[in-house]
Image (cartoon, rainbow, N blue to C red):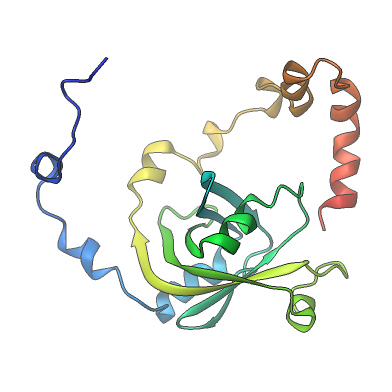
Length: 205
């Protein structure tokens, strides 16, 4: 069924929202300023968006604050830690270097975005500089910055993301084992869930 209220033209879209706020335009630049660098280096978490032949992908990355390294005002580097080996982000980047990053800092309402192009390197010397607990990442992303943009607090204030009272118990949602078993009845959900805490300790790096 066709939605009679669907917005399908730029003219309609822009008429709904009005003029762009001047400050939102000023905040977008093509390099990493000293102030933006401070936010990147304080962030322990970044979401990476990429695009490939199969479609879009959005993937989280996290480490101690400063794990995304600012090499210069046009370049950041991100270690690719151990995971499930789907490597969706990396598969996309090999075929299409376009990338977008969203940085979050616990307790801070503003976020920072970078749009640019990424290249995957397996340079052993570089990877070793990102080692944690004696384990270096297999690869590192070199991200060339096209645009940097500082986002205001509204989304995080509305969501109350960092408010302690909005946090919920993990047990209130289905466990990973439960989710997988619903998709594959032969899967041992109880064993998977019971072993996960110890497996996480051994495989996090």
